[in-house]
Image 1 (cartoon, rainbow, N blue to C red):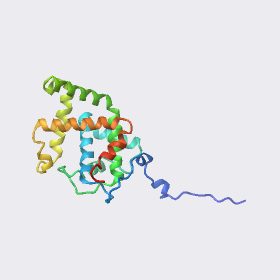
Image 2: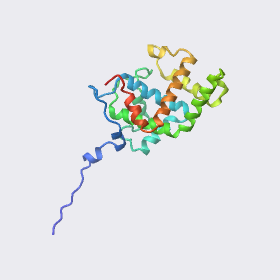
Image 3: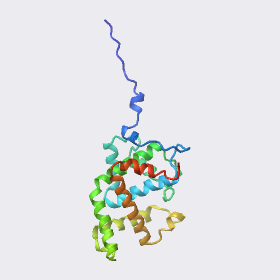
Image 4: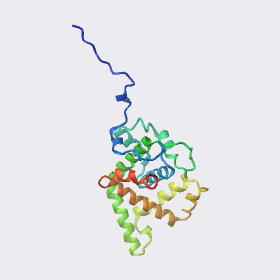
Length: 207
C-alpha cells in the first residue's frame, strides 16, 4: 500500500510567520503602514534610557531578541542600529521607514528589559523624589547620578544638535528631566498590560 508523504516547503507560510508575541500588539488604525515620526523617536529614546541604566544594554537587547525568537526582525547589531536610526533626531538618521512589525519587536525588547530592571527603576525614581523634596543635589545619590550622567553622554553623542527638538535640551537640567520622564515611562511598561498600554501610547494623536 502506497502512502503519500507530505513534505513542508522550505519557504512555507508557517516558517515565514512572525513570532506570536508580536500578535499581542495590534496594528494601530492609522492610514500609513509605517510608524510616524513621534513613534520612532520615543522608541529610540526609551532604548537609550535602558542603555544608560544597564552597561552592555545593546548586547542585552540582542540577547532578548534571541530569547524571544525575534531574529527574523532584528538579525544583528547592525540591523538594530539601522532600526534605531529611523529616529529623525539622530546624527545617523537614515530616512529609513520603520514598519509596525519592527516597531513591535523593539517595544517587546524594551518592555522585557524594563521588567528585568523594575527594582532599580523604582529605586531611582524614589531617590529622585526624595532629593527633590529635600532640595538636595542629585549627585547625593550615586546610582541616580550615574544613570543621569550616562544618559546625558549617550544623548549628546548620538543626537543631532542642529535639530530644533534636540537643541532644546541644551543643559544638564533639561536632559535630566528627559531622563527621568523616560524612567517613569519604563516603569509604566512594567505594570499589568504595560507593554500593550505603552504601545498604544506611541500612537496617541495619530489615530
